[in-house]
Length: 161
Image (cartoon, helix red, strand yellow):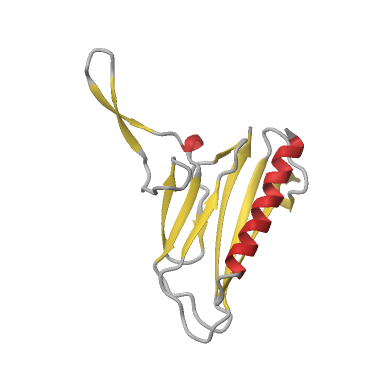
């Protein structure tokens, strides 16, 4: 399990970097860190190896290499197999709408994600889908990514199962 999660962490970072850089003028990086507690403070260390129950924090940074601003940036971060999204950890340093996917990134919706369930007696109840079932996190930036090196930063956490 440890090797599988490590490969996913490294593979996701590399595939994201390659696909985003190919779409210049915006270049992106994705880095994964294990969250450790040392002297009652959180410390981030490179996620070279991860183990069950560890917390992993993903950092996604996007830089505008063009001279003009870019509007409408959409950022998507996966929740790898073998992990579960940790509720309320998706953060952006830019104004952005955050949505989640429970279907492998096909559709995105605002939280709380709900579904109607029909009970055996025919009663229909609305149930909240827990964050552990999210497969992707998405931000739609509301602010412009400024030109000439403007940056936007996004992060979220998952727990290794």
